[in-house]
Length: 239
Length: 291
Image 1 (spheres, rainbow over the protein chains, first blue to last red):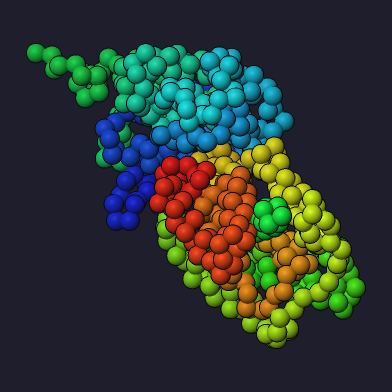
Image 2 (cartoon, rainbow over the protein chains, first blue to last red; image 1 turned 90 degrees about the vertical axis):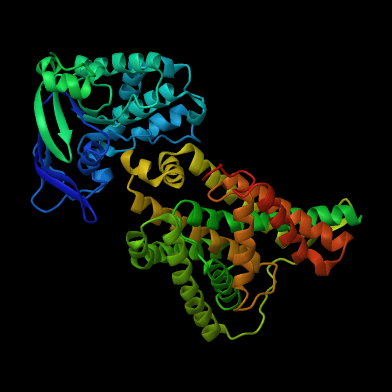
């Protein structure tokens, strides 16, 4: 469904991405692992239309060319990004945040349906609808951010380090919620530091280093891989 | 009844300040354009109302229906043609602020020049309603009262539009965080153009209302720009209720200083108040920290 071919991007002289090929199939949950500065966030920004890709790159979603589209057009094409740091509107209530998510034309007709779906996914938010989002805990704000993205009726959800800054308990709850996103027919491409937990819920994974893909495979294969264990799972080298 | 005089005068003055500032807070808070030619639009609208009234015998309330849509369209075009290239070119908010100040400073002279060309540099005024009400022994001019009533209606309308409707919520979202607004599927360029045009429509409306009871000339725009700026910054940029409160406070302070201290000190009082607010709350009375 999402097809990236030979994607490159640069910040000035600095080449952040070089020839990335990546695919997300319908209904799939795919994780990108890699050190800080490897280019994972840049890749999500390129898909979302916030960072321009270099000539020769190809990004398409269900046959629609996403390159060159403004960010709000990408949302209309069915791709919703939850950026690192969440990007929610802190001064607004949870309800306002969620309803803003349904701003795209594609989402308006389904607004009520989507809201009900978000409420089932994050029951905690239901009792907090009137609360000002900025006064919530980090984990709850992340739920609002994901909820808002889901309100746009996306076919693909992009998440940039959703568990960043959350307590282990909250992070656990978040991963459980992510697992359930699968049930509502939304594909997910996400970036995570927590390799073990994310590989446990993902179907496939990509390893990104210095702006290139250095490895890919099913989540099970990656979990079992020696080099992955050393680099991302903190397992000591076997004697 | 000096006290009641001062109070009534202060409230009407403050109501007008609030209305004048609301347009600027939309332009600055949502579209992020610091519009130095803001007051020129007010004066241009005042002259348009004058001309419509004296030459075409169209009363100022009907003039609103003509002047406001024209100003809305003109400001929308100005944003799309002149200001959007600046938005595209500016790498951050600070740069856009400097660019927009320079560009609109030029626009100020263009509009002022046109008004000077058409009307000359004399002072103008006209009398639409000359009735005076007596409220508890204090005189209150009917034209002022009417202006404030219209201002209240428009202010509340705008408030409801921003707080209760989907497009209004989108404008607020752009004002808080344009990047996040894009991700929520909002066309930030369209929203900014809309906010700028709405601001232009509001300032034109203020111009028509002000013209009913003030004497004005072609070079007075900067006074209104300054007052509006002070009110916007005092209230917190992009904050409608902040602009309302700050406008009313400013009107009351000016009015009371004029009655009880000295009329010559009103401007000094304005700036003293402005300074105090800036020292105590740099983001404005209702501004968000770090916004």
